[in-house]
Image 1 (cartoon, one colour):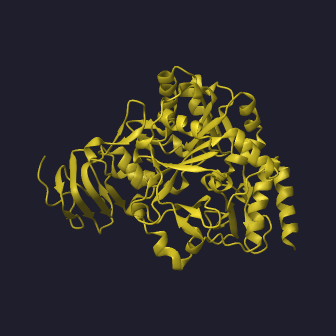
Image 2 (cartoon, helix red, strand yellow):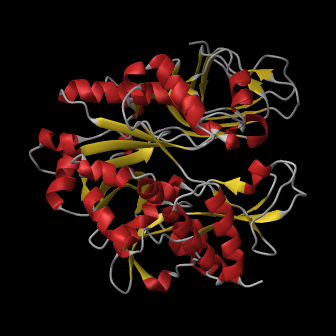
Length: 480
């Protein structure tokens, strides 16, 4: 069967589900890239580094609060957090002091409206998997937000592709397994297909600030908004300076032929270019996924591309049943919303402080945010504790024992140790922790046994604690 016939089968399947033409066209673009053998590799020889960016602290501009009337804040809220063992919206996970991501997001919105004395528009991009739980949460806890018109926009879904035939994959035992999320690059197709883009423009909205729901450092900043508006650029990305901890992640670059800003992710890097890719002195900046978009210019670009934005394809190899490794091998096609930077001539980026980037991707991150190394600010952002002197502790918890939230919470029933003076914490093996415990400097805890060992209260400074042969005691403690 030809690739065009294979896609027609996908089109038929998507149309039967009522999926919009914009989403179908975007998926077709990714599908065509897949069947053409496109690798998505961006050789080092075809790009040049971004040598410097405007720094947030160097923006000198008089803020303009009237721009808020034309601005919509959008949080991406489609993730289930399955990688952390969750089966509900990740944003419903308690992150700190009894507050969930959505609690803090809602309080950020209300604080922002109070501060600016203006009802700044807020919306969520939910998925079919997160919609019910999320809306029920707002109705129960924040009814004043739940009743607002246009709160929710739904992310699309796309067919999984049979890796051998390039036909839509089938799963008779559970047909829902035949579909997958298209990645947050679906933002643009969802805006068009839902009619939301036209509605926002008709209502006088011009600017959109988008960020991930698990990044509680990403709040609407009037200085950045004013700079974005005055610069008249169509698209602006917030970046942070890469560190050793970020070297394996993607980076910003300039495309050689036209000096257009682009993103290069690790999957787009050839093996021979890996050293250059990870050189943080050369490629200095990474995408926080905090994006600023001119809605009128987005509309023009979409119209000029037959109703969608042609984003780079991301290929993921999976099985049709994620819980059955022996099930049919499939390809899941995704796109990333930040990759749209290459589709906007004149797009720009700025370098922002790490305070605007505090995501939770793994239990390591959650453990750190729940500790005293982070605080909740008056405007309900999660921010590094000033006592950490600008450097977050590096936490490494072994995935066997701490990959899942349930296991992390079992280990921290007694509380989370103080990390405010900790440089690096490594834990291998099952342990139980308590809040009357303080780690300073570099601390390593080992337990080779299968039974959880208790870390006793006290001060642990620059030590390696081997609890393998201990029922409850640990070594090298001094009482605080």
